[in-house]
Image (tube, rainbow, N blue to C red; front, side):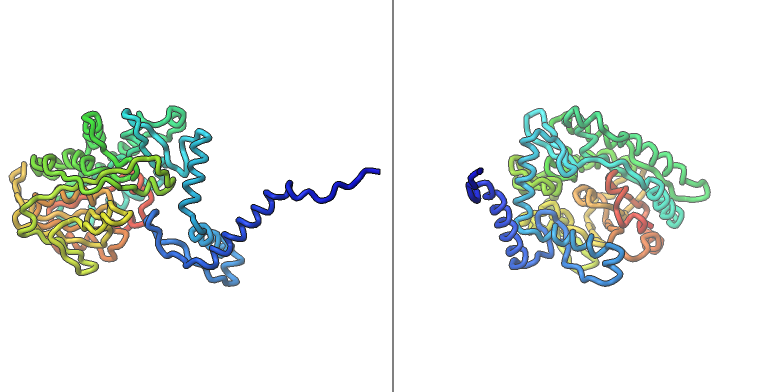
Length: 406
């Protein structure tokens, strides 16, 4: 008869540890206060949904509750960082839609994965509605490539073989569609800025960072290279003082791309700004939605926060008015153009300060938040002779304000 050796406690230790860990996290989940906003991800967090018969039956309650648990899970950022560390140890080079690229100097660059656009026609249609509705102003469209294109040579070769169609192909499709909108019966023109990619490539080859290594936005110098491509289309002479008056204001910036992996082995970015000493005398920046005013296009309070990029134009606002009575109105075509309307995503926030010296009034619209008609606004302000639409290729496809451009 085989002798019973009794219960082996040792072999069940991992089970007890797992149960204890789950119990601790359950207690923390219930006891810790719920967060409304994630500084790390710069977004609102899901709150506990209220169940209803309809939401339970159609599954929306279950989905909302899953998002709530995911957003409010204790030590969420720390656990994400550990998970990424483990994935990197396994040799993974794309994690949470973030590509790990290597600069020539050995520094890591984080690049957001690029998804092929699905809404090109929607964008062209929105631009067409604005163009047809505006009575006399010229329309200029500026579509900016992302770091995915400019830093393709730094990406892991294995991922390059899985690339979607190139961003240049999408740009050419948009260009053809937008140029075709122009009608001979209208006094205003419509055009799309070309040469942005070449300008960014030149800046990159000169040793400058065109995009932040931890964020999806372009750097101030990248915006400057965009400005060089844009200037001829707006008939503004290039402001030669810009490049020499860029000042570093932070060397500890971790952007939204980094927030998807929370990897502290990646070095932080520096942020630079351009300031004209003469601004303090006459410049007025008015945030029409909050009724705030400032003598600068920067809110330096953001330097003490995680979301440092928001120092440009004080984060997001539905409508901003920038007045500079001392602007140089010299134009390459000899025509006087004092005012411009800019319809934009957040890429424009770092480019607009570079244009302040050349316009008496700049109206800045974020169609995600503006509830009026931009077309009607332009028609009600006959002094506006130019309208600039500025988006990056990825935002252009998924921006929820796209349909409100006009």
